[in-house]
Image (tube, rainbow, N blue to C red; front, side):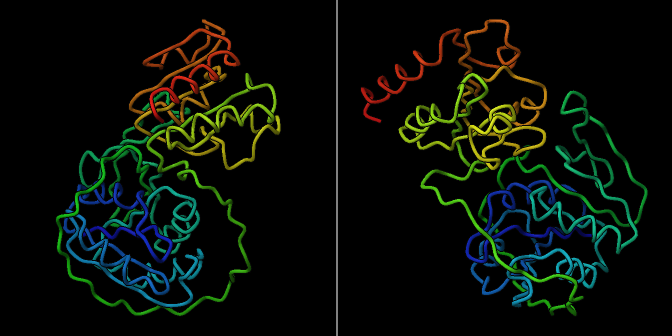
Length: 313
C-alpha cells in the first residue's frame, strides 16, 4: 500500500518542511504520492514532482484550498484515501490542524511527531520533552502520521514524477478564511533558517534584543527566544523556540542568556552545532552545547558583533 504526503506550501513555493518530510514518507512502504492542494499552485506541484522518492503528484487546484483550512482539506484527503495505507504530513501548524480531523474521519489512530521510520508500521517519536524516544507499532490498515521534518534530511531534486489533477471534494462549509496578519521580516523564517540566534531571560528586557538582531543580521540568521523571554514580554510569541514553541534544527544555534530548561532543549537540541553564552557555568545549556562561553553576554555579544564586522560580515 502506498503513502500520501500532504504538501506544505504557500501556493507559490514548496515548504522546506515538505522537502524533508518526503524523505520520511518514501521510507513508509509502497510508492510515495504527494498531494498539493491550493489555489494557483501548479508551480508547487512541479517542484514536488522533482523530489527524489516521489512517484506521483496529485494537484487539487481550487479556491477552497488556498489557505488549507482544516475542514475542506480533511474532506479532500478522505476522498482520496482509498489505496493508501498511510496519510502523512509535516508536523507544522497546518498539519497539526487538519491531520486529527483526517484521522477521525478515517477512524484510525494518529502517530504524531515522528523522528524516525523503522518500517512501514513502526516509528520513533519523542516523549517527555524529548528525554525519551518511544517506538510505536501499529496494526491498523490505515494510519495518520505527522513528521517532525527537522529530524530528516532534505530529499534530492532528481525526480521526475507525473502530475495528475485531483478533483475537489465537496466543501463541508464549516469554516471560512477571514484574514491573517503575518509578521514581516527581512530575516529567514525561524524554522527553516540555517543559523538561529536566541535570547533568554538573561537578556533582561526587550530593549536589549536589538543587540542579538545586529549579530543575526551579520550572520543572515533568524532570531529566536526562550519561553521565559517570551513570557516576560521581551519579544513576541512567534520567536519562541521549545516544546511549546517552534522546533528548529539549524546548522548553527547560538543561545545567549538561556539557562537551558528541558522545554527549551526539546526545541533545539537537534541543531548541528550549538554555541552557548551564559555567565552561569552550571547552566544546563552547557551540557548540550558544542561550544560554551562563560561570560557576561552584555560584554561578549558586542565583542562578537565587532569581530564579525572585522571578518567582513
